[in-house]
Every structure is written in structure tokens, then in C-alpha cells.
Length: 461
Image 1: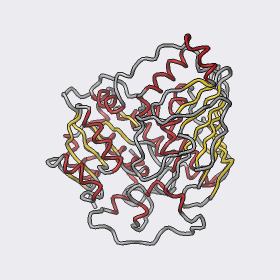
Image 2: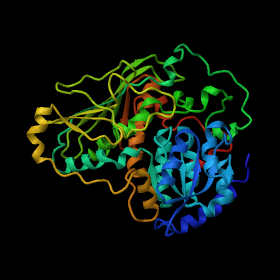
Image 3: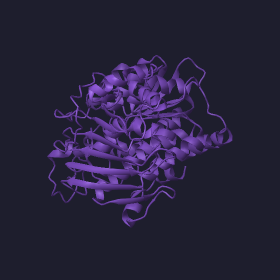
Image 4: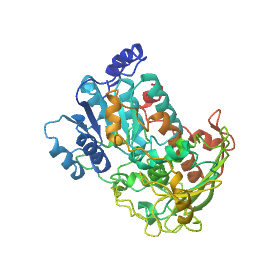
């Protein structure tokens, strides 16, 4: 494949290091945007960014370009240059690209993002940020080193729940939180897999439209199989982050930020149903333990996934109605019918229930909510949605609400949770050294396996 990609990267890298003091903002009316991943969720991201009126689509990249799921975007932007390899795109058009959207499988977020940042390109990357703890750490450091605008794609983090949580926390409505339950109980793709699986699926013929080598990016060598692509990648520890990585950023984000949780000191998989070392459990209950922060007490977040693995509901919970603003899954999974995805937040004096994405919190029981209704602060409206926020930040007019500085530690919470699922064991984590202290294998897996030959350089940027 594109063997000389590092040469132009090094030229841009020199420029960026010289000019790293200030973020390079964009003065043009529209941001010149390249797009990596143009089908399924990637295509939705492109449409949302373009519909703001703030983006000019200048390049399209997909390893399976021309496949049925890419056609709509190709037809919508027929004259835009097309690439299968993001390295070739950046080499040929790097000077014309100001920002990039990354809507690819979880494991490939890292190399695309690091390459873009290292040549001064702003990045919008879908959640979660990356597959391993150390990849996220490098992305956080890279954003600071190269002084670029970054946004993780948990779009609800620019909606009503964000501004409500912030206002209620500042007003003392949300205080002394000691426990949170977070739950996503929909049926997932891997729920039909055989838990006695002892090897990966057999090799199949690679589609003519697919550049399989570039699809793999930094991952270990795998033969092509249809069960690795088009959303199926989320099933496998080697490629995805399961239900936690998929939905955690839509459910736990505001609690994590505004309660200043940072990283846990312990992750305990108190329930793993259908454990397999290749793919995610049929159900899991994970307890994340966070210490005191200033005058805020310790917090336990308990995560529940699995169709029947429901959290206990407090008295007066009622019913959590569906939020019409939450987009349906694009990967064929089913949303839960018994209990909508969301969270329950337990404070000293008040209990709150909430959904996912931007759905606002409610105080329960209803009687208690009515008692304090008059004392609730006014919640400001969002000045921009998540996509506008990113593009306006590229132009120096706003600050990203889910920048890597904020989204990185949240993503690392999920990285640690997935390690606990994969190994089915409790992890003790040193928040200062960022090491797992009770399990040598888990500590090695913070970084994951060695990248494939030819892809090592992304870990040195």
C-alpha cells in the first residue's frame, strides 16, 4: 500500500511544531472538511455537518468505497475527490483540508485521528475515541501538542441534558451524589453468537470494492469475513467497544464531566453472562468506583447491559418515555422495550432519572419534584448543536463541548470497563501512574497488541 506516506507527514509535522503555540482557526466562511467513513453512521455524520451550512466537503474516503452503503454520499457529492486510503488522501490533499470527520470502526479512530492532528487538521471523531486506554492517552496528548480543535461525537453533549446538568450542579440541586446506575438493555448483534466459540470466523472472499489491508489499519492480521464489517465489528474485542463504548458516552457523559469523576480506582465485573474471549458478554454488570473529589463524596457507577439485566428502580420511578431526538441505531440492533436506555442518579437529598443523549433529568418521585419546582434554576438553551459547535470551534467562535480533554478520560473509563469484561476479573487502577496494579496481563492490555508492521509510527507521533 501507500509506502511513502510518512514523507509528506514529516514535512507538515515540522510546520506544526514551529507553530504549535496557537490553535489555527479558520477565517473562511466554510470549513474545508474531509470525511473518513461515508456509510452508515459515517454518512449520517457527513450529512449533519454539511447541513449546518458551515462545511464545504472537499474529500471522501472509505475503504469500501462503491459498496451499496456508500452510494448515497457518493451521489450527493459526485464531484468531490474519492480515496480508499486515508494516508493517500492526507498526502495529496492535506493542504486543502482544514478538518476531518472520522466515522469508522472504533479501532481505526486512532491512526486516522493522529495522522490528521499531526498535520494541523481539526478532528471530529465518533465515540468512543479509541479502542485502547493508551491510544486515547496519546490522542489527548496529541490534541495539546498540535493545538487542534477536537470533538468526540456524543451529540447529546450539546443538548438540553448538558446545560441542565451544568445549571443544576452549579445551583446545588445536584449535589452529594454517591451512586449512579447506567443501563442499556437492548438486544445486540453478538447476542446470537455461540459462547463456546474457540476461533474467529473462517476466511471469505474479499469484496471487489474493499481495501481489506487498509480496513485493518493498526489491528492484528485477520482474514476477511462479513462478520467483521458493516457494524459487525462492534461485536469483537479486537475491533469494537461493545455496548459500553457504544452507549456509555450517551448516558454517563454529563455525570462524568460535571461531577469531575476522572478515572476510577477500581472496576469490578460483578456479573458477566456468556463470557467469551473473542466477543462481548450477553450481559454484564460493572461497578466503577471513583474516589472523593474536593468536597464531593466517592461515587459508584454501576453499568448494566443485556436484555434482561435491568437495574433496580427506585420508588416513584414511573416510566421513562422515549426521546424523539435520539436517532435509531444504524447497525441493526434493537432498542430495549422493557426499559429505555438511561441513568438513575442518587444524591443525598434528591434522586434523578434520565435517558440517553440530550434527554433532560427528572426529579423523582413526582411529589418531590413539585415541592422544589419553584427553586430550580433557568436552564439556558444550547447556542449550537454538536456539529455546529465543532465547526464554529474550528473558526474560533466557540469551544468544543466534548473535546479530547473532556471526552478522553470518559473514553478511558470505557476502555477499563471493556478490559474487565474481557478478562472477567476485578481491576485495581492507580489513577496517578495510570497503571493496573493487580493484573499484569490487564496492564499490558492498556496498550493492546503490537500494531501491524508499517503502522507503528502512529504511536510515536
